[in-house]
Image (cartoon, rainbow, N blue to C red; front, side):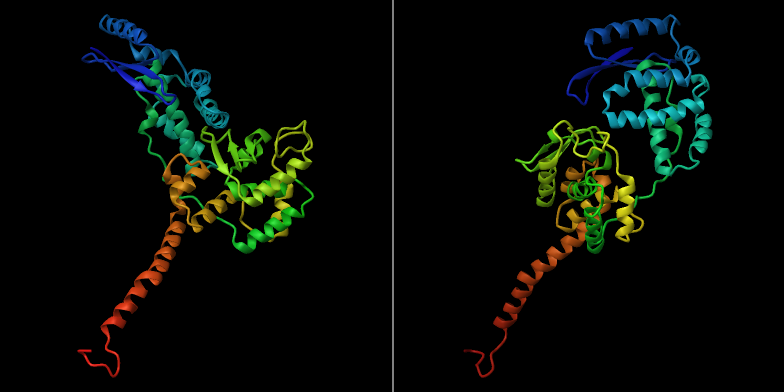
Length: 365
């Protein structure tokens, strides 16, 4: 028997998901944009199953994992932003090279687990989890929408336990030393790039892709359009960043729209200049991405809430921002201590003063 469910997708439109369930047969699921198409397919599929003309096993025998990944990249990855498309294409490319020739009927959890062991060579647990998640989503689409497989074998694999991730930020002394060495660098892009990273928490790629059209000096804000999670965000600009951008604007070439172009008009990271600046500032164990951690840490210590930090950094979930919660806790403890000293301790002294008997005064007086 077929049933149709309305589903609201990310862009606000309504899709129609069809479930065809017959006793002794696997449930068939497919999503349509139009209700008429959903009804037509449900009737056709129910008839095909009853007459023995349909079986997901036949589809799985007909296609390889390479076929699945190729179709997924053509039809599904187009929905994502450039950053996400690039990452998932790289991740799926690894699976295609390793298991692409395998027919979907032979793609078992055991085969995936063997491949995962090969994937682990030289990669962290968190990276392996991202690769497996990309494959799992492709398999889920093939299962739920294309009906190429009866189930998603990747869902049976246990994800590796990830480390909480490091939070390395610049101390006051390190920050001053780094900015000084960046200012003295022969690479004129380095200082404003590092300063903007500290002031906005932007990722390296987000900063390098910035164009002058993304900067609004009147409203004191910058718009990160191409972001890691595909959602653009606006970040306020503080005075040091504003001053640096005004200087850049006064000396920029009008025929180049990028904020940080190299001499070939490309958005590349000035790695040699960055490493030289770290060396000159005597700063060790520090990456450019740690400037983002520094910004978040400074926000937390200045009293920003976890939600406010999440909005500025553009984290999709609050769990990503929770690593800075201990810093906001320290700020809250300081706020509570100041409140106590200003009100509660003063109140205690007043109570003691009113309850006490002054020397030479009678109890009745």
